[in-house]
Amino acid sequence: MWYALPVQPGGEATRARRATSWVAAGVVRVAVLVLVFLVLGALWEGYRWFWINRDWTVPFEVQDRTMPHLHEIVGQLFREWPEGGPVLGSTLLDAALFTAKEAAVGFAIGAVVGFALGAVIAHFKVLQRGVMPYVVASQTIPILAVAPMVVVGLGNGVSVLGHTWVPADWLRVSVIAAYLTFFPVTINTVRGLQSADPLALELMHSYAAGRWRVLWRLRLPTALPYLFAAFRIAATASVVGAIVGELPSSIQSGLGGAILNFNQYYSAEPKNLWATNLVAAALGISFFLVVVLAEKLVVHRAPERLV
Amino acid sequence: MSAEAVVSVRGVTKVFGKGGVTALKDIDLDVAQGDFVSLIGPSGCGKSTLLRIVGDITEPTSGDVTVNGKSARRAREDRDYGIVFQAPVLFDWRTVAKNIALPLEMQRWDRGRRQARVAEMLDLVELTGFEKLYPWQLSGGMQQRVSIARALAFAPPLLLMDEPFGALDEMTRERLNLELLRIWSETGSTVVFVTHSISEAVFLSTRVAVMSPRPGRVSALIGIDLPQPRTVETREQPRFFELVTEVREALHATGADEVEEQLAAEGPE
Image (cartoon, rainbow over all chains, first blue to last red; front, side):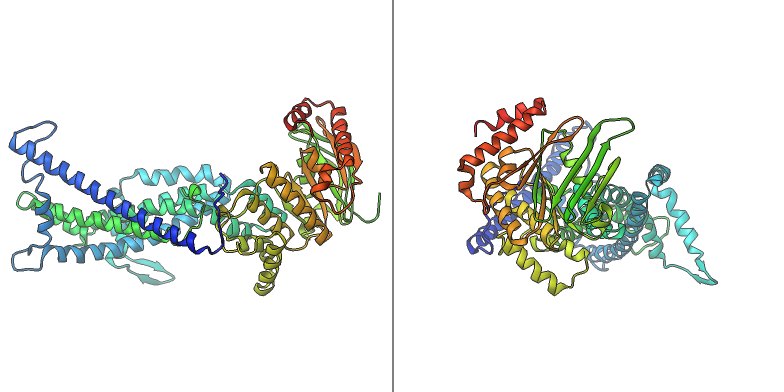
């Protein structure tokens, strides 16, 4: 538990050694990433080869239509679609940016609402049993069942004190993304805010610290690793929420629209859907990485105490 | 008893739970200005509970505690004491300097004053140069020194220490003992110190309160007349051994089995 590093304050040699080990760790990480990618690619192509050339049928049959070559899927990104139009990759990039906007706003709304709800629940213990079941229940309802209500409901506009404001289509999708985002944030906020070291609470008590100061200076910093663990889950969930939310809203400009579209023409051109899936995955990974990066900048914690 | 008592404990009893365990029974204790009083006793004798009651972290079931002539609660609200626990309880997300500055922030010291004070404290616990590191980058002994610096940062007249060196190895513990005595003499504060080590209690204290378990009572108060300042040689003086023996026999008289184990574990002095 104790860290007995031989720390020399500002030791040049130590710093240099730390820098090289940091680079080495980076190289290893990239190497593993590439290796796993190659293995997965080999599995894909291997399965294809055996099941197509040997007519294997168990557990499932494979044709060109169900599993296109990987290089063809990637190549599809650089083909014009439709013929004479822009390349598919550029169309999908635009769609991804559109969906990213919905997801990012949804993530933000979900994070704020999720945190606020969690903070209230953590603060008033009575609520924990009274409210939590509903929070959990909210997540058992499939998003597809909620989406139309949000889209149609908000489509009529929100009236406050005589002013009616109709949120843009994409903003309604954000609300659906937020619906998926808030849940892990609420759960982890409750847990995080309640996980302060009892001795640290006694220390704050000895300083005659009020509730707010204990919250800002102790409970909230203690909760940060928990919050970021939730943000990591919420980041990918917000992308899924945005994509799924586009479907009932008949929004064509995002990845959801593209998926719906390419679904309908799957037998004619399966590679388009596969390429779209690649882009959607890349978007989810980018969201995840942004959260990881933010965590590195914000959370200073002993390595073993990171959640 | 004395008018200038910093801590005055009168008839304090503590019962945990409804009709449950009596942790402390009828405790009387006075700690004078500049005193260094150790509470020693086997585990379960309520010595930590007594310290917590003085710090108004735990409420006594009955009896009175005054600190600087005020109620324990009032004294806590006036920040009359600094506290050090067995664990350093440093905030992981704060640098060493920011950890020491925590109580100063709570008292709304302005930034310049805080920084000056933190520099002084770092100097006092000999950690200058480490201010920008995070707690988990320090050894256990260094962490505990930061915790002591934090407790002393706002110059409280009273220092409460709950087995602060209990988790450290013997070498580090003896070094920090010396350091604590130096700090004590430099700051002129009053210390109440909980320990289960006989030699540590004798070496540090002006008085040792020996406690017996179940229910916890102060069974003996032993004045430690070793000359000040105490040094490495103090531990080798015959008088030191006499006092260690005296405390040990007082502990024996409490008849706790744990004491036997304790002595066996410590070996011949």
